[in-house]
Image (cartoon, rainbow, N blue to C red; front, side):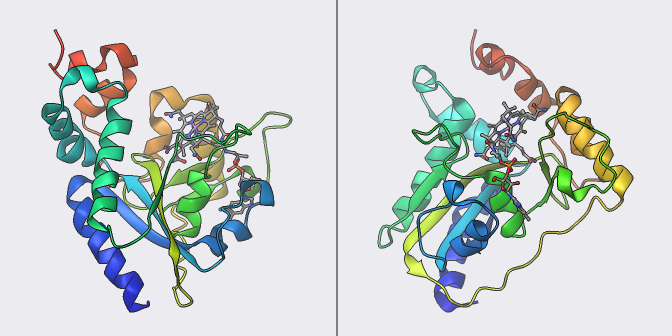
Length: 238
Ligand code: B12
């Protein structure tokens, strides 16, 4: 890895890892290579980017402290605001660099997502993106089947939050690590896509592999609740 990349990666990790985030570097060219042009990021192939994931620890390490630090009337989308707060701090800490931040929920005027989070996670080696085409004996007929990323340590207990893109950093040497194919058998892949598409509300797809850590009961209850009731559950609203 080039020194510049290693340096940036170290600084970003230093700002985010202790808060329950993971960051994985990739080149825009790796991402664009697997997508049709309508989804391309319009930067040269060697442009450096990082995909940012939140892991189970984010809830206690970043989210709850963030809520306590902010006036509640200013909080409309608590998790999104927490993520953007911390990524803005990363950008400020790298003030000598141009940094573009893209969030998973941002849409373009053509109503397509600003970036495809699962494809980014896969090409960066962060989490394997299981898609219908990974299954040989397809049992779903005409049904639309969405793909899902599985993380080798956290299974489905994580989220892909953002990209950090460095338009003025071109890297020629960056080793591409393939994601770990942790859902090994055809049967398990079918089970995973089935659970993700038809039973995602019961969380079971997230446990398709044995995980190192998952969301706490408190975190599950929070995310399962309708947005208007969530803060009350954390004892933050009367
Ligand atoms: Co949703 N959703 N979603 N979602 N959704 C996201 C996919 C994401 C990533 C959000 C996040 O983590 N922040 C997570 C998935 C996490 C994971 O994978 N582990 C997510 C989740 C968790 C859910 C839900 C469980 C609800 C929830 O808890 N939030 C449900 C589950 C699905 C269900 O309904 N059963 C859910 C639902 C939805 C709806 C509302 C249905 C829509 C449509 C889903 C869809 O199209 N996949 C939805 C959207 C729109 C998104 C969102 C915002 C965009 C997805 C999208 O439009 N993709 C993403 C966040 C984001 O990406 N910014 C979250 C466009 C399609 C065309 O992309 O199917 O991947 P695609 O196809 C591309 C690839 O196949 C690629 O090319 C295709 C494009 O041409 N490609 C690749 C081709 N060949 C190859 C080869 C390789 C190797 C690779 C890597 C790629």
